[in-house]
Amino acid sequence: MEGKFSHRNVCDRDLQIRDSLTGIAPEPLLNVGVRQGANLVTGELNVNPGTPLQMEIYLDKSSAPVYGLLVSYMKVSDTRAQEETIIFNGSVQHYSLY
Image 1 (cartoon, one colour):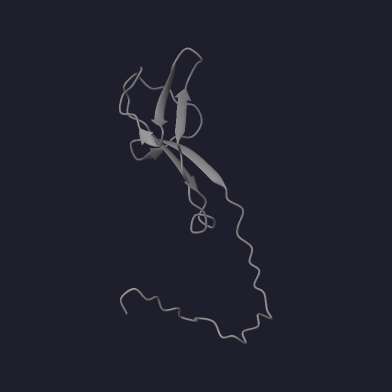
Image 2 (cartoon, rainbow, N blue to C red; image 1 turned 60 degrees about the vertical axis):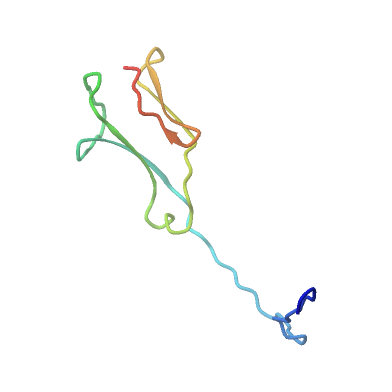
């Protein structure tokens, strides 16, 4: 079949679509948390500069299988004078301004 193309019919010529399918996805709920070690921080937290903290961004359990999550930029701050970009263009920044 050199130089020739074959067209394959995948639908019946007499195909008629008579039904429709409608679904409802759960409303996504975005959650943010901070961990110090294995403990989730609740409320205020005083830490010394250089203390490792882990920020978590996640969707709730019902919407996570349906939706994706892309974080392209994130800046954290404790005051207007001290702030740190921890995600830039989707990449984690491995330095600290504190």
